[in-house]
Amino acid sequence: MAQRILKLATIVAASALALTGCAAGGSDSEEPTTVTFRLWDDTVAASYEKSFAAFEKANPDVEVEVNVVDWADYWTQLRTDVAGKTMDDVYWVNNSYFGTYADSGNLVDIDALFGEEARDGWESSVVDQFTRDKTLWGVPQLYDAGIAVYYNTEMLEAAGLSADDLNDLTWSPDATEDTYLDAAKSLTLDAAGTPAGDPAFDGTSVQYGTNLAYDTQAIMLPFIGSNGGAFQKDDEFAFSDPKTVEAFQYLVDAINTAKVAPPAAETNTNGDFSLDAFVQGDMALFQSGLYNLKNVEDDAEFEWGVASIPAGPAGRVSVTNGVAAVGNAASDEQDAVAKVLTWLGSEKGNSYLGQSGAAIPALTAAQSSYFEFWEKNEVDVSPFFDVIDGEQPIASPTGANYGKGFDEFDPIFQEIFTGAVEPEDGLKRAEDAANTALVN
Image (tube, rainbow, N blue to C red; front, top):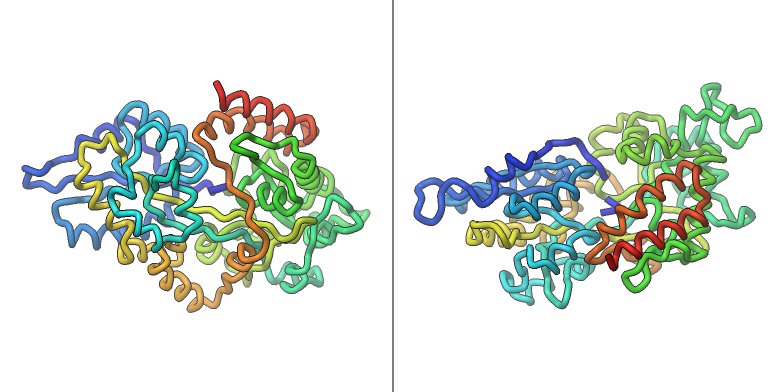
């Protein structure tokens, strides 16, 4: 999941070795078997702790230990630990990275564990994301739905805007068709309170209008998709698509010329920068997903709401995503792993994720607790769902060798967003390098 970076609970390889495949007790031991579960989100981890407490009461022969690894380190650590046979027994994956591990035989076959008929109970888009060669390789856990815009009500009103105005905004490479940038400028202020659209604006923002940045899921893919561009075509990267280049140029100009969003030097390497700026009252609009809803609810001490993302020339196009829990096929505790995976795929086990509003469960029968939580808190989550009922969502990045491609294009994308490289030149270079990595 263009996905967020959260607080670190680092796992060193030595610890993982002690926890994986070497758990105290086995089928003949009086001590319960320990199954370790790794994920990257400490907000959702708290819900899992409650879920596993209920699981352990029903299964006293198994204990589950939850380990949180920061998103920034997650995939590098995962690759190292899988290769070194020190990986946790069960762990989270997203659509972009799971193919490598499914193809290499590292994952438990979920269809064999649940039966293919179980697929009908999960969100179909999440099932599709984690199905490869007609086999489901992960137990769907979270359904991210679409992307929307969180807004600071007071900042909106001070600029003479309303939530309805946000729902009507459009962006376009053609300045005569664009209304989004003018709104963002009116919400961007310097220290004197001068908006970015005023000639007297000094170029240094103390209040950012929006969070445009190098953020694949929340920003890049929706802007690419709503301009009719592509990120991938036939499992190859397609960054040089003219419509994709236009979307990048728009984002880069908004950041570096119009100054309506934080500089890339701040956001390229700190995925929490914009979230922090929004909840601290330093940003008016924060385009993101359901995965940040609980964070905003917990930390924002001002009135806020949710509106639709801006529509582009190709319509209002979002990305939808999900997260699955996979079983480590190399674990020595396959019976216990099967019990944990079965619990995670059950209505009771999955429902804990929604009870605190942390995430919407991927099992449709378990989703009512999530909607009840946010209705009780008087938060309208419909913009996250309305957008995926409209235009066809743009596909999230995927592929068995996506990680190799990412390693090549990531530093070039960072240069593009800082303005050091022109989008057209940088995207062609990134495309060539990433596609070469796919076949090497």
